[in-house]
Length: 237
Image (cartoon, rainbow, N blue to C red):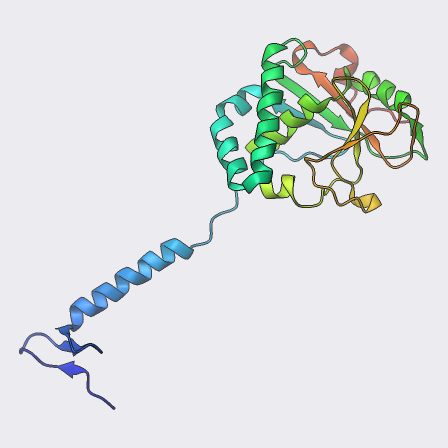
């Protein structure tokens, strides 16, 4: 075995490197330890951020626009890191935020949304809209959906899960379009719909019968009515 150790003095043991250089063993060990620490910092797994509130069927989900406004830069950075798809969603969020800012009566600081649990064979669109008015103010539109997605990012959900991975919710949600008509929002595992949570899909007709979709309701927290207080789990026909 090649002897790489050289005793240059009585006090220190030196090492001869492969390129012929000789350096103190103490310095070599120190450099090695430093490199190990740097590598540990680079490859140290990042801690997952705890999700503070999850969107679930049968439960009210709170959207706080003040929290969203304070976190706009963080949301923008996360969207931009998701590539062109994330940048497109951030542009959509910005447009919805502007609409909400211009219409504070319609989109106040605090909003709560509600996803119904599917428990029927079929319903018409109008029946679904009526269900939303029975438990809250009305059916959600695109602006509220975009606020929901931003709130979920603030709550700790990843943009990758929201923009690319299949939705974990049971059913696709029915919402209204601001310009009239209806849309579908998100995906649904119960019907093998693998669209991600952030995706919109067009609606065919105002008179279609809905078999596998659920309405998505909202209420303005600052203007709650008495029935909103007592309805924890809305009645479903």
